[in-house]
Image 1: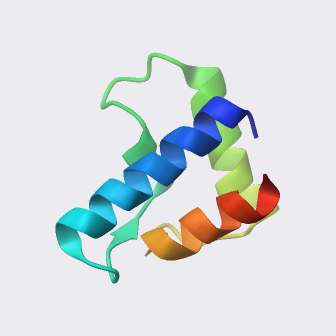
Image 2: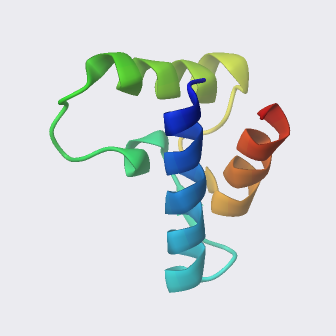
Length: 72
């Protein structure tokens, strides 16, 4: 996964945890605007989420952040 996407995921996870607490769940759509302006990046995130890690639709933000950090 490209570095810019990793950084965005970590930032969004941090923001959501700060707003809603450590139990907050996210889907990979949380890292994108409501319009699909970068389909390649969306597919990269979806592939990482669904195919690589076989994650459920919603996962805890802290789990997602940990997975991203481990891959750096």
